[in-house]
Length: 266
Image (tube, rainbow, N blue to C red):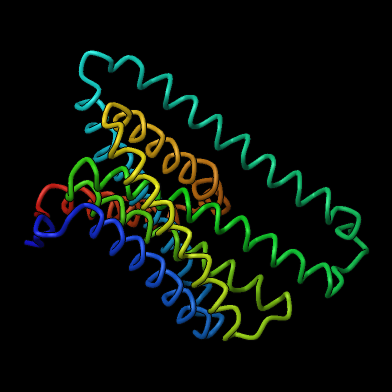
């Protein structure tokens, strides 16, 4: 079994936020060099697995610990969870509105996206991805402050859902005119935002342990929101029985990995 306890919480947070960012970017880069047919075949399975990992980390790992640490104030967690989901909903609305406002007049049915617009879209995606990575770092940091098992489960879930996202970002950077090397470098720089988020979680929550259960509830809201609003709708694009069974299998595999990691790591 993997032993994480000899490392300090700050070392664990730094190691896993850095490792998560680097692994997800490198995996996405390798994925992009595969033949297109292979990418189209593998990506739906990756998304299904990531969905299961997010659901497992949020509901099987993070939420029970949030309830445990909340003690007699457990009823406040529901309000925190709802508030977190609404906050992420509004944040995504702002990003989508900004993107539509800046690029809407070039996105008509008969108006091709100009190279300059494609490049500015790539920079917008870079900013959004950095913010997303920052929030992921907060999630991992809060989880490791609870315990190392929870941190490991959260890090696995974050890496699982980051890989499909980085694949999409990599493609947008290439469409924006960036070379493969520059696209890789930009993704790596963006991934460092998760390290910053982890450090902020460590120093902020380390001084206010009473906020830890509510930070965990926000982490639950973040992972649930990504799974329910970003990943699951895409899984419904195909509804044949074979695809549905495959999706259920990979979702179950993602949840099982988190459950086993949380139960036996340490």
